Structure formats: C-alpha cells, structure tokens
Length: 243
Image 1 (cartoon, rainbow, N blue to C red):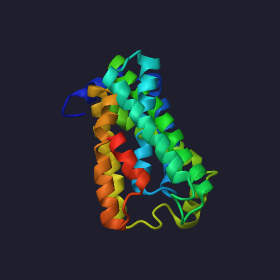
Image 2 (image 1 turned 30 degrees about the horizontal axis):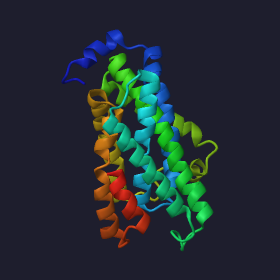
Image 3 (image 1 turned 180 degrees about the vertical axis):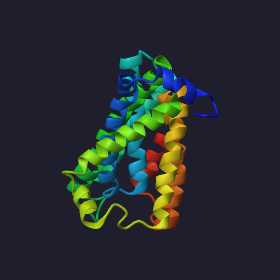
Image 4 (image 1 turned 90 degrees about the horizontal axis):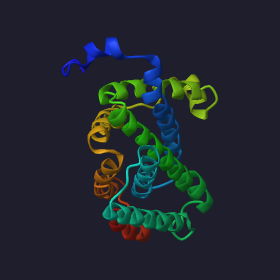
C-alpha cells in the first residue's frame, strides 16, 4: 500500500461506515464460513472436501447475478451444471455406508458434507460482496484484506466465549499444539487472502473460482503421497466433472 501510494489517500478518504459496508459484512460471513470448514475438515478426506468446496463457484455466480446483475455465458452455465452434478454425486457417494466403511455415514453427512455446502453458500455471498466493493465502490483490495482480517479476527475472538475451541484456548493457551509445520497453512492462507483479493478485483469471483479448481489435482496427488490413500470411485468420477 505504501508502494502504490494508497496510504496517503487512506487518511483523507477512509471512514468507519464505508469500511464496515465494504469489508465488515463479508468478513463476518467468512469468519462463520471458516468455522464451518474446520468442522468439515475433520470428517471428510481432503480431496472430497476440496471438490465439494468448489460448489462455492455456483453460489458466487448466483449472488453476482443477484447483486451485480452479472450474467454468465452459455459455457459458464454448462460448467456450473457439471459442478453441481459432481457435488450431488459426492454427497450421495461419500455419505453412503459403502463409501465410508470406517466411519458413521450420518456423521459424515451432517458434520462433513452439510457444513462444507453451507460454507460454500456463504463463500459465494461474501465473494459477490467483495467484488461489489472492489469494482463498484472502488475499494482497495489491499485495504479490504486488512479490514477483513481485523473484523474477522474480532468475530472469531467473540465466538471463543461460547465455543469448545474457546474453552480449550482458555485452558491450554492459544499456541497449544502448535509446531513449526503449523505456520505453513497459516502463512499460505495469509498470502492466499491477498492474492484472492487481487484476483477478485481484477477478474471477478466466478473466474477466480474456476482457476482455483486446478488445485484439485494437487490435492489428489498430495493426499496419495502423504496419506497413501487413493481417491474413492466417487471421487474419480466427480474429479473430471469438477475440472
């Protein structure tokens, strides 16, 4: 921000109301979304989770149409339809007892599949709101990242008063269980937040989502390398649909 000169403009143009309008609501939505994703992480394998998480592209397209009146091309509409087909296939397959012989199917459905799908709806709404703030209100993507980080942190800190995680933090301390490897996802998310803000501002939420799908191939490869777990038949059928 110092390099592109936006800090100087910030002192003159920044207002609390403008900040809350542009960044406050998306930040609160993302905070709730991240909490739901943490629940889902524990009950789904990484590839299934990643593919179901891509349904946020469909909801981003829906909310960008509602909020920005931005229509999708015929090709994009067809791609979104394939994405929903893959999500339905995964939901039925991974939620069935055959696909989860080592786990409780109801737990996988209600604590794995449902949270990630609800999180996808919230992600689509938040992404559309961010696109509106950056493209219509011309809010700086760097400033939005800072504002959303602050508001999101405050929301999560407020939630610790009642949540099991908050109780664990009070009992053991905030950094209990951390190792040097814990910094990898933390730093990756921080850098990713800045990059996602830039891409959303320049290309829009739907195009951002389609590009991120390429990470599914990396997820499948890493899951096999680190866990020695090959994708299920449902994943193998759904993967090309999602791609």
